[in-house]
Length: 467
Image (cartoon, rainbow, N blue to C red):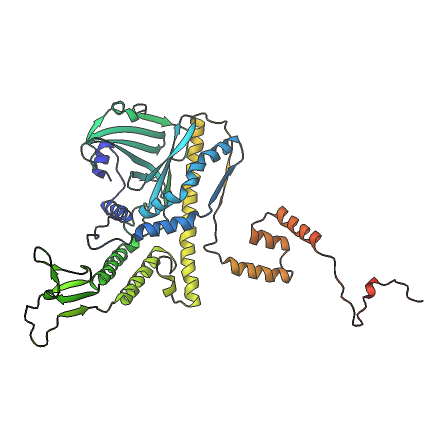
């Protein structure tokens, strides 16, 4: 991150990131890319932060679908949202790792493109009474040789309108702004206006996706926190315990120590070992005393079971602190829970997923609003209304086998219509479900009446048997 003091002084705004939040955000970011401060040549990363953020993103966005309809304007917005939805899992993962993500749409020719700004690349300035961000600074940094060029783009929703300013800087240090320069002195920014005002809008032209966890790093801050923010120490414990496990195997390698007089010699007089990985020299002297052996075997007992068990316990604690069910990153075979504990564990995952989906939906609604404004400003399509609908796959939080069996029993007792059963369990609409039922009836074979006890089928005999 850039030095927040530099940003404050350069734009004369009060950046709403406390030192506590800045330090935490930096730590989450380093953990995500396997550069946590406790890692070293001995302590390797289990890659748990990225795995946790990835699992959250997968569960939240799997089979996610967003529909925008209602007018030609809506159809255009839907087409511009395709790249967003195609990559939504990736950006949800970045947001999960760092506590949030910013969607910033802008015009490029006759299209709307989206900047995905990670939490360590923007600087919130102000919030309204509901905790919604109303002003923010975005940092865009380019490197040319040994020089760092930074553009600060400031967005603010004010009572006079929506203000956007752009300011450029040049520095020889990445995290320092350096000297202010004209936008025209850097080719990529030469066409950007230093200031613009937009009137008659009531929301910002950016969308903040915030993770739905309470901020226990700085409770006074309305910023989001990482999905693993409460499990930092436990993740460190897991990495260090994994190092112990690796060392257990490394230090416990089988070896045979043999008196060096038992080996042949090379031209330089050094012993020639049959296999360097297995054999070790034992310098016991040319004359072995009584009771001394020419060789000894080193084959210690491994303690991997105890270490793995302890590591798995730490992983379960991480799962709990991150809002996941046991077995998400720990060994599911080692989870022994009562029925009540299993239900509680699943409910914890369900709450985490559903709450995150709500937050993502709020952000996407705001993004579509901002895209609609840019459509009007750029005269891209005629004005028109739009409506959005969201669908999230709930297979993670729903036991479909149990639902299917229960619905079958309900249909059998005539308490549920068959078309409802098909809609609930096969994802059909009502028209298709009713069509299935009618086609099934038409293909059913004619009733078969078996012969009576005499072996004669009276159904095929003439009705008049008086003769």
